[in-house]
Image 1 (cartoon, rainbow over the protein chains, first blue to last red):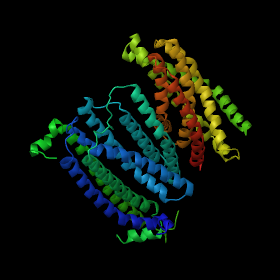
Image 2 (cartoon, rainbow over the protein chains, first blue to last red):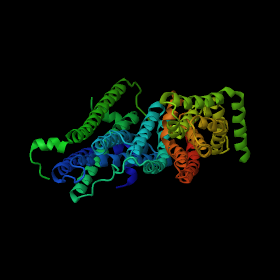
Image 3 (cartoon, chains in turn yellow, blue, orange):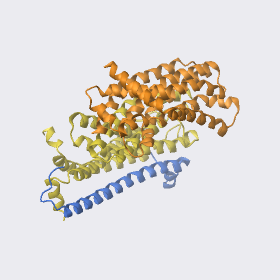
Image 4 (cartoon, rainbow over the protein chains, first blue to last red):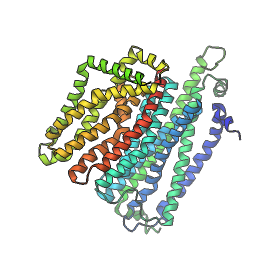
Length: 244
Length: 63
Length: 222
């Protein structure tokens, strides 16, 4: 498979179209399996009781939130370096899913926090840096929506994501530092109860499900954006013509 | 993991509210995203079709 | 090359000198916002001492952010920015010159005002010293990050607020380390750790932000 063959929007459109059902179904199956393990296989935790089961959505969402931001930065860099169309489209398509999953991580983290520490929101290191990550996502989305020119919009967003990505490890570290100094809570949301093998299985299944879900949602967006941007080309006109 | 009964399952050892609101909001977000994706794709499609129908130039050509 | 940087710097400083109200406004903003907190929270000395470092750091950040959109706006509107970017001189120097000018005009007055406000918050002298030093490290970071943000949001409607939205998350580590340094001095744990981290953040910012800012300038002006 020639790599550059799929760098063209028209060929990638077809590839994405074939990949989406596969990814979506796999995500569904893995999610069902993961949820089954979360509720019916993983045992009750000795310290936290049943509330710890939130980990099975909190951790995958948090991981994906960060991973997606990294992927956005990567595609942004590729787009800037090669001056190609598709990488920027990938970058833009990833952002909304990343923001939603980051929000889910925050929500589930807070809801887990209440039974754990008795407070709806705690300035735990991970929660705080996830909040800042959400702000970074929102900033990027806001920047895109306020620039009309597509080329400028893509590049500006890519540059912003790159400066953000450099900052993410610093933000994480600074918040961890700050949190250890302000020892409010001694147990971190990230410190999972000692991992029974079944818990790890559940976590891996849900993470894989989240990953495939992200791929499916992103590719759906990519296809839509490709059609919009390439609407004046022959292949899109033909494709749309078939619909009438 | 053995649940003694369905009601115990829903109760989640007293933490039912937290567990289910966490999973519930997650499910809601996923659903909302899926609905949003479908609507956006449909609206986009229709808009592009309309633009194509009204496009009077003989052939498209790139910008 | 050095003379280009100095020329940009001198030009921006001259322009700022002609509109003294701008930097006075930013300075008064700093003073007013800091004063709002005791009014809103209550004047007990211990409480003020506890919140002082954080409040002063946040107020300084906001005061500095206010002035950032002015970094490139004037030049952009009359077209001179485009001319400067098109010139063969490296855009990075343009960015650095403007950031330096911004810091001199908007950052340094904050440093000079901070001790006075520190007294208002009942901070001990060693804490005030660390406060000024941490702000001296932090305000340049804000100027250079702000330059990148200003370059990205050049000419956009709602630019000022958008700029703030973009820069604040990126600037958060500086806030954490800076306020933490002052807290550390007051708690007796020392400020060296936080200050060295702040210094490291300053270095990293100056390694990354100028290049991103100059690329953003070119992108925004195409």
